[in-house]
Image (cartoon, rainbow, N blue to C red; front, side, top):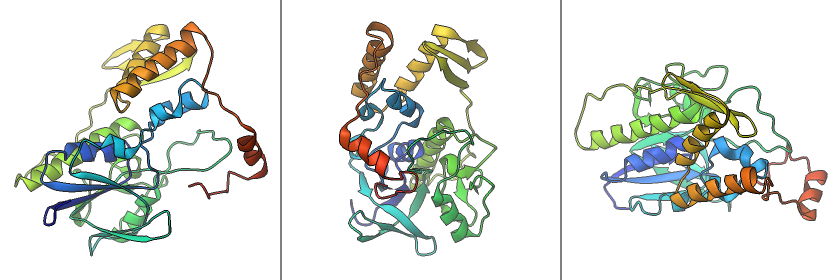
Length: 296
């Protein structure tokens, strides 16, 4: 990192945070991604890991490996504690208890939240990251029932054009809290910061491109609705798999995911990635993981 260059702090290594960093790869800026986990989690395929179809490493590559070829980016393992918007400093806590201060010129929090529990049933929509509450408190902007903070059309916060919020922590144009809005918002914000550094003004507001919806509904069966076309069954499942593999990080992970799917669902019809050991089972039975946050 070089002194005097524009400093961008990205809070969270989710879909939006990664896209912000990548959009700034060739800019005159230094990017710091701060996250309390060391990996980028591809949430749409998380249940495939829980079902024993895919190994967890394929959907959770280390953040440092994701940006390893980007000379102007670094990753800090820490949890954001406080946002000083007036002083333009992010205060975070390292795993060893050390306090970190991360000064910035542009700030881009990305929605990211972990909920410890023995069993998770997702049936009530998306709840915004606690970062949204921090931003709302710092700017005086309210949040909605889901905890989302309202942003301006360029994804910035009112009164703070240098602070951006993206992903499922924001309320913008009634967009759903799924991956695609976060990905597109992250790319937009990264390009906006890059254009500002180049002296360009008059950026157009964020415009979401709806690419459709898709979901699996059973063994080798899915429904897709994209660009006015609808598919079901094996065709829909093939399209669903192709799109999700395409958004995985790294070609190695993409190829390995296809091979794992082929092995588990077609050739052997066996789910090999199911690992239960004595220590893990005993820990689950003797600890209330719904309230135990020691591993967060």
